[in-house]
Image (tube, rainbow, N blue to C red):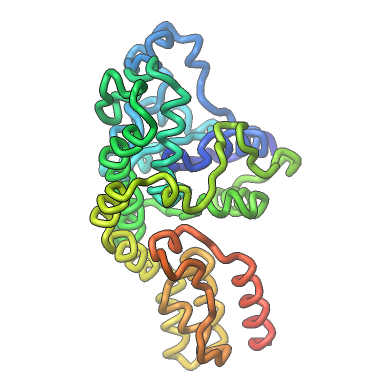
Length: 349
């Protein structure tokens, strides 16, 4: 199957969460067309200065929380097998544009917004002051920002970028939980990309109905290549000053935990598991509890359901960071989940 014969694929990432790595690897795996030849367009010379409307082939305007899809361009490319990437919010405009273009499925890549903020600060420093115009479409940046010491730059972005990143994660979790949502959403983690890249791409392709021409392009992300810096969990703890931490803690509170619980409760396997349990089919229920845990490993109801089936009074032991409940949401204990799946399969046989 060639790239032109495959369905279009749309994915969304939090900035500094493996976007370029994902985009380029998916293109190599599927052969799908990527960004049109915008560098040949008359308006391209001003694009990195922040001006976009001179380029007809762009399928969106703005970036991150200001990004809005351009319906005509989106509908022009979608039927031909195209690989779309974005940082957008699930706004009414964007959701409607996707639906109207026949793009009913979206993969969303989540990352701890605090770690994403650290990567963002390093990214902007590397990009340099000449990109200030481009990044002004997201939020205002002081003229002399690049002259500031690192700690002061970090403090500025903790108070500007971090609130946007927290709301972005929250918005996608809330959209997943919305009973009226019209798009099929796949939620993946930056942790998946780092720890099991082959499985990460297999899940994306299976969700969208695409196939890999070859698995050779899948290589573990390497620091310094494809905009990948390092991607370590908990970088923020070493980079945030005490007042940055205090601001972050107050900003986050339990917002993401609450949104996560609502999204997990909306997982289709959750209702199926409960129905099967009520119908006296604990084996079938356990299989569907596992389906929930594959996507939401820290969903308490699903953990309890599997623990009851396996008769594990002390629970499943899937907690990976009891000290930081926010960080835990963005880590997937894949090996432990694989063991549980074998245990459930053996007991249900």
